[in-house]
Image 1: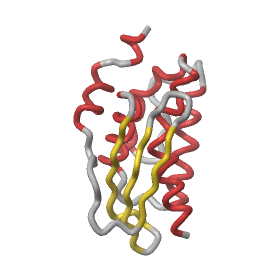
Image 2: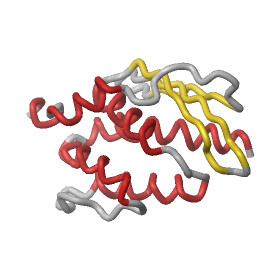
Image 3: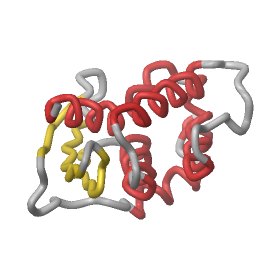
Image 4: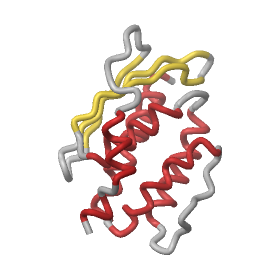
Length: 145
């Protein structure tokens, strides 16, 4: 069961760590953690006219959280509070529907990489690992408004 959860594609995204590091001259940063497993992620953001123009993260977390942060680091361009809220709802729907589709209905095609997390559906305690980077970004954007 662990092999299914930590499949090669997830491990590849985690190893790529797209967007990892400190963003110099960030407009804001926030650290969040998952008390259930100890995952911690700090996100750094730069905003222009309400839209995310730069993003980075530092994750001390499991491979699921690191992979999720890497996908976010690869595709963050153009996100604003409303788009992020829509995306977070779609992610939650995708990983909680036990009989959900293999490919989800993402708001933009670029987010199809998130389909790799469908395996988390069967592991309720690991869902926050996937959502934590997106939750941190939401908190950072909320704190700037």
